[in-house]
Amino acid sequence: MIEAAVLGKDQDPSLGHYLQEWLAHTRGRVRATTYQGYESLIRCYALPALGEVPVSELSPLHLQRLYSALLVPERRLSAGTVLNLHLVLTQALGQAVRWGICERNPVKGAQPPRPVRPEPVVVDPALAQRIVAALHGSAVELPGMLAIATGMRRLSCCYAARSHAGGVGTGDPGLPLGRRVHANRQAPSLALLVPGAGLGRG
Image (cartoon, rainbow, N blue to C red; front, side, top):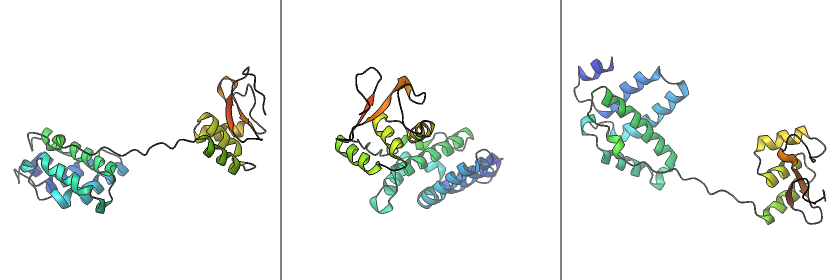
């Protein structure tokens, strides 16, 4: 048992020693890919900086300084990677509390970075016209027009295009409420039409 291995020989293990024990304990309890992710984060980022620190002396400030050091531009690490490290360490030190190795989880006092989410790209009319022109006559013209006009996901667009080879018309079961795509060939644009709206195919 890990309690005997750690507490019996070393009442105050270093973080590196404890994390190696925790990884051995965790290996048979998670998927292989999950374990590999845990091991890689700990080996690459936690052990080099904090491996020699006794678990009893580990503080939230240790973790906060580690996160800050990992996020310097020279490291080129994403905030998501540092957040994943934080989550792994939270789990590992939480187990140390349950095993009686430490009284509190110091990781909970540190604040991980928020992952930076890219701003969504908005397709304005000018960009939509360029896309329509580029797709015209290609095998992906219909799926592309569906995506722009409806906001459907790629798989849904491809499925609709395959299911309705030859065009998408009113009442097609692949599109809700009989919606259809309208292409204006004189002034390339797209519009989502609903039957009865008074607009033709164009």
